Image (cartoon, rainbow, N blue to C red):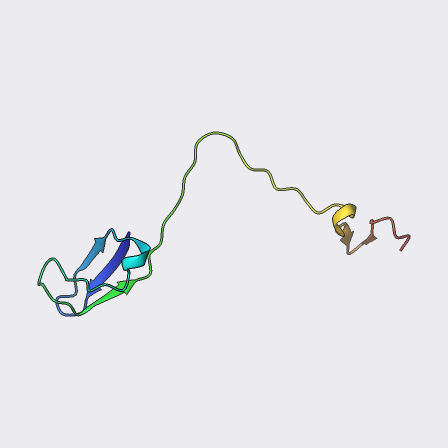
Amino acid sequence: MYEYSCLDCARQFERLLPMSATDQLVVCPFCQSTHVQRRLSLFAAHSRGGTTVETAPTAATGGGCSCSGCHCGSGS
């Protein structure tokens, strides 16, 4: 799904195109102009169910150092 703005009539519209056809000629459905510009699309993804838990780095991954000193087993 690609979003476009018509540079002649200033209206916005969407087109469902395969990635291989993104450079094809796109026509504004409102004024039939070919003077259109592809817009940056924003989207959100939602999921149901479980949650994702991120964990802090461990000594095995080189983390664990803080302002109070290093806790990575290096003796520092």
